[in-house]
Image 1: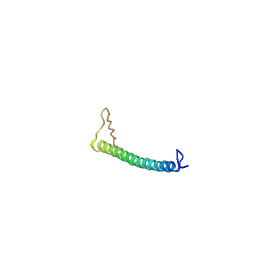
Image 2: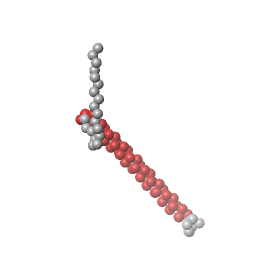
Image 3: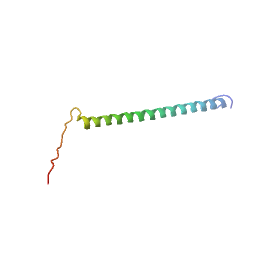
Image 4: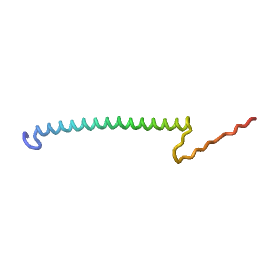
Length: 76
């Protein structure tokens, strides 16, 4: 009970180690979630920039073909 792998001190030490690992894992999960959110925001931002460049400046990507469709107005 007092000595060996199943001793009280070994159990307490193992619980403390487990608590530390659990805390570390949660901190890493939180950090990963924050990084993922940042990546999503950056991608969204790049999509917004690309959309504005296409619409406002008429830009197209490399190896992309641009078609402009003109509507004919009829006067009745």
